[in-house]
Image (cartoon, rainbow, N blue to C red):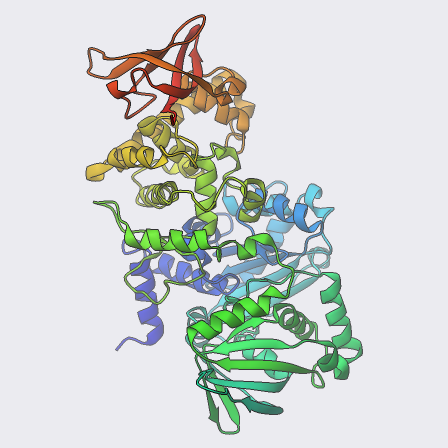
Length: 637
């Protein structure tokens, strides 16, 4: 008979399509997935690239099975994330987590070698590149303190591993700690990530609030809790914060702000006064049941008080005495409508980062429904996971079918805003830079759906080994090439032509043809990259991904445009004629002085004789001395 953890492991293999991998490799991936999902529940379900990155298989560092880095509580997946976070927050606290499924002592030795020789280590692996960047002199000047090091060991022994490090190594870190996870602890983490657990609270004092009239509020208590009870509620058996308990709190922990430092100061200096100075917290749950002098809470969520809870947890980790600290808590068991009202009301009082509220806007809700109602024939149905883990309880929906906000905004920036060089940036940076161009009421849902479709399916083709592994880091460029090669230049998002454009592009994938289109795009990318290196030199080989100059070169290779400023200009004229060439493709001329402008169906899919005599807008590209029109669109009368 299989135990529950083994059943969860089997489900994980099926969900991620890992049946062809070794059991040992899958188990390491399973442990990494669940342990690190505690820091941002649901992230790995919509960002399998990040999961691949943290699951380390390094010949040189054979006992490092997981590498996970946080800066100001934000997960790092790209060096660009470091720049974006520091630009916003000015200072950074770095946390390094290394996980092993086996010998902790050997892991410790390899980490000491890694840190001491970091400048000389080959940075061929993504996690090493990221670690090297975040610990470079350039970034160290922005540290608020030395990094925190956490060593995580999965085994069945009890207690923390006794690690011995040299004095020089210890000086590199503000704190070094080890975390041991056994099978029981791992199952507790799995249940916590799935938000399928119950917790008990002892109330020092409480009273039940009764609704008047016909309003049904469920059970609602105003209670006084001890800080120690709150810590027990919001931490796992390994003393890690249950971050999924804050999923419905749109305002994440805001770091070591002035207000949060005041909270910590009060906890240290005036613990008895804390209950008077603090506004308290709000907890919602499915059910509250009195039990043996305590109250059992089913699937509790802290929807207001993230800063308070985070600072109490920090104080607990730093050894601050909390036995005389009390917190006022509003604890509600009610229906979904009332709960959502509490979430909105509780968070409306706080200043939050704009991106925290983005996905609760009407456009995103409409987009979520559009995804649920549509499917491209011959391909898997896809879903927009607007809220973290919203499809977690649907066993039929696999991770490779879900895209989150991060993947969606990155895809849209690459494909429909033509800034593929920015597409790897952090989502809050992209939202700040492109908020006036994306997710606007009145936009069609089709381009967003198409961007998600390409993102998920190209990722799947790379994962299945059907596209060259060496190009995985250029996934967005491959997607852009597919779009441009099959559909030509796309209309602007507010254009009335955008739906027709998307439909034509989808039609080019009919009958499972996306794999061939993707393969062609990969070959085109390799050809363009080779030309770029020949032109610029070997030193430009590694700066392609975030290079706007390379983006312009790529577009020139497709369309022959020599001047990017010229490419941005929009012209207006009348179509003189439209004819068929010997290959039965449409071509024609637009009236212009001193020379009429040629256009062809290749650059303008969907064009036909109905364009004759019509007023059109268009852009011009050049190939040598020859001009031609692209993006030819009929203008409204």
